[in-house]
Image 1 (tube, rainbow, N blue to C red):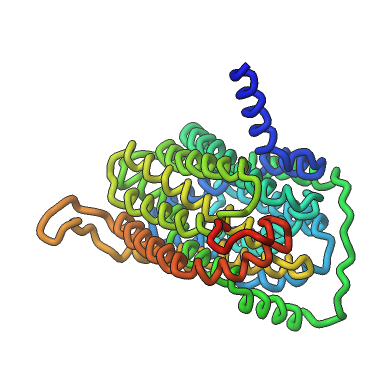
Image 2 (image 1 turned 30 degrees about the vertical axis):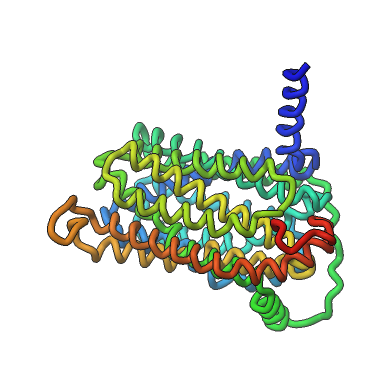
Length: 450
């Protein structure tokens, strides 16, 4: 009898963890995007390896990443204004179509042997402009795919799980394909994979609500969105930490080819294994968020996740042993995803609907917009720092890429400590909002968890 009850409880828990999939539009998005994201991760790995194969330069790895992400920093705020005005599904259909064209162009140039670092830079800029509209559009569209707001946090967790399943599968496939063929096949498969998400978007039945707003200029609405983000303490604090993590922590992925080839003495398959390990950690973290019933407790998870991410980076930088590097990347991936998903969920829960597109554009700036500066900084540091002993007198000699990741990890840990000091003030602001939404009972004591 006990076993039967336990089985029913476990089944109910599993069903609850996937409750956002009961919405037809989100199911379509889940299926199409999963296929497309596998291709996207294949292209990311193939591009990094192609750049390193052509140039053998950590600096150019950082430069290409900078070129692909800086347009997001520049254009995302303007994109947010237009996303608040337009049909978000149509925005995504266009961005996915243009991204497909970009992948086919990469494939054609690589197959023909005409690919150069200049073409890679140009096409990376094109992808960055696309992402400036795609990322805030996709984040803002989430609330329209999931009609019940109570399922929004679960949808974000499932979306994070989907990204990390792709992160697990895509790099592994890319590593194997590059080892036996060339990077061109990864780009071609990515281009074909966009068809799945475009079809899923076209099959959706979505009502785009009319947003009542004065006929104001783009700059006025841009200023309004900035004032809202800057004046709302929880969103401002979350985005500040997120920007720091994106600037100093996430660019370690740019240096992965250096670690695979120079530190661990491997090849493209080693790069695929490292990225796969990061995907395993991130997937486990995302699944743990999927079983949560609401957003309570997520605010205090943000600094914990950032600290775990920073410690994982430090361990990865110190390691020159393959299995230890895999373990440290797994830890870093878990912390990175926990912080990203928790931040996204809280921001999406707190933001006013008429400002969602603009707020998510600033979220995109913090996530993708700071990364180009971090990538350029990481590439420059790895190039400039000479191989140096770990200890002043003696010790293992660490490469510039290793010192870069260690130092960046320390900065991320310091950012987590700073955020922890802001928690009491954040609770004061967030608690009344949660009470109004019914997330916590109005009579609950101030000492209870948020």
